Length: 196
Image (cartoon, rainbow, N blue to C red; front, side, top):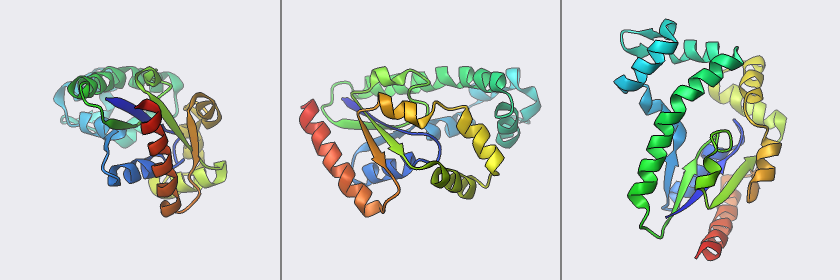
């Protein structure tokens, strides 16, 4: 198993690239999808309730209320991340164990790759990038958030410039999906040759 990370700050096109990779027939692990599923697991809900009781009602987490708390208080965000990370790490390790004997490329769609220290599990790292104004417009439109909320979310992540310095390749995502697909195909062929 060779693991390729696709990462980048919010609104930089990470998920778009991951969808293109998936359309090319590769397995893509969606870490945000893992987190979304955790909110339906009773063990995870119980952990959230112990630390953020005000956001749990009848075994259901009010994610908007939780987001308002953590993006207004860095310590609360760090607390939430410390609760989520063990669940995520176990999921990642389980997938690595399951596919360890395979020669295929597997992709990881993950925003907080470096923040979680997961770069050590990866054979190759792709970082998506776009200019700040485009990034902000994308997030405001997609998530229906204010410019102020975007800045709160964006400011708690490692800067994209730092991520770019730590990556193997940077893909600018301010182009058509067809151009992105061609660029990705070339990069993946290079990765396969390099890791063969």
